[in-house]
Each structure stands twice: as C-alpha cells, then as structure tokens.
Image (cartoon, rainbow, N blue to C red):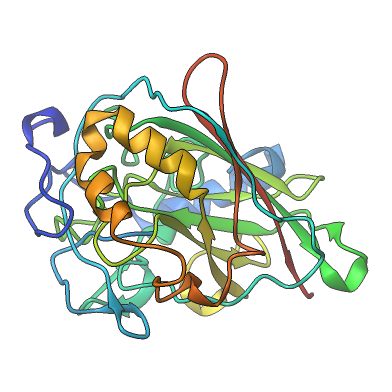
Length: 302
C-alpha cells in the first residue's frame, strides 16, 4: 500500500479515499490477550470533526460532520498566546453526541466499525495507525485529561478507560474516510492512573465547516470493558480556546481550510457547544520545545 505521504490531502468537506496504513486489521482476540498481559504490568501507566465517506449523519441536532483524507509528516507548530478555560468546577461534564464517526462498535454512517477491539489500540501516541510508523501531519499537541468523581468530593478516578478520537488537520476522520478499520490514526484508549489522569500525544485538530474544533471521548469503567460502545458510561466532547487556535491555524499552512472555517463559526452557533463550554473547555499553551499542551479536568458521578 502507498505511504500516507503519497496521498494528497483533501478539502475538509469533500470525501476522498485515504491511504491504508496496515494491510490486515488486528483482531479482537489478540487485543483481549493483550489486555490480560496489561493487567500484570499495571494498565494505569498505559493508555471530533469531519471525516468519512458519509456526510449525511448529524453530529447533534442539525449539524453534520463530513470530509475525508489524511496527510503525513509533522509541522513544527507556531502561534502565540495561551488559552484558558474554566475547568475547576466539580460538576458532571455534559453528555454529548459521539457523532457519526465513533468506530466504537455502534452503527454510524451506515457502517459498524470497532477500533476498540483491536490489539494495540491501548496507546498514548495516536498520531499513526496501529502497527504503522507513519504519522499524520499536524501541529504536535499533548493533551492531559483528569477524571474525577462528583460523588466523592471530586476525588480522582483510577483505572477508568478513556477512548479519545478526533479529526485530522484537514478536518477528516480515520476509518470512515477510507472505509478501512486499519486506518485508525487519531484514535486511542488509555486507563487513568492513580491521579485519574491520562495523557495523549496527538496533533491540534482542524476545523471543518459547521463545527467548532473539538475532540470526542468516551469513558468506560475499566480498561477490560472498553471494547464496545454498549459498555460506556459517558460520552462528551472537548473544546479549545478560539484565539489560540486561530493563531495556530494562520501560522501553519496545513490548516488553511481551518482558517476559513473557524472564521465563520463561533461557540454560539455550534450545534453542540451553543449551550455552554464551561465544563468542556481545555486550558492550552505553547511548549518551549515546540508544539502545544492542553489539559482539562472532567467529572462524572459514580
């Protein structure tokens, strides 16, 4: 199969085939064996947007997600400023739609894909497909998510699984854009550590028409249960500071479509975030060595 660098990125709203990173998808059986091994090692140390061939599925209410494609390599990432959000309130994070491209075993966009059953999906670096060393293009981003319990004075929740996924810099989702589960970049699972925390290494998500930039996540009570959507206990989305994203997009050519799309959107007009982002807004800042860091504390009642 051709490397991702041989595939030209497509516009954020136009479907197109994407490269296949792995000729044969890993099996669900091998993932369960891997989970068994992880249990003995301590799983606590392990581990949004358009994309896909079907653009008719709504991401909540009247909005839709659409687009496809990918890129290769990395951008050094420039942009100025620090974005902050109010993330300290000990309140249950809102339930949000998983959108039309979850790949969590549920049927969406007329397909049923399940990356959660793949061996290797438990990982912290999600910039490539499982089994591939080819990374998608984009400004580097490290995002730390801390999970707490509102029923225990917001004490950290250890051992819970977080499945995170989001779109490329072009505004497209893996799996659905190529109709191939082997193309599963920008998707991954991790178990929260003793501090209720997971950190994913990824890229700054792009902005496609009709939605503010975001990431999707699902929460599962254990890593062993994070194998299908039926077992999840929460679905929500993460938002990012507009001013900082605007600076990043305008400073990096791979996000040219995002510049236009973000300029035409606001949280007030977004079909998911229009009711507020207080509990879903990340704090984001530039790293000294390049790229960006984002963090958020989210709470559930268990």
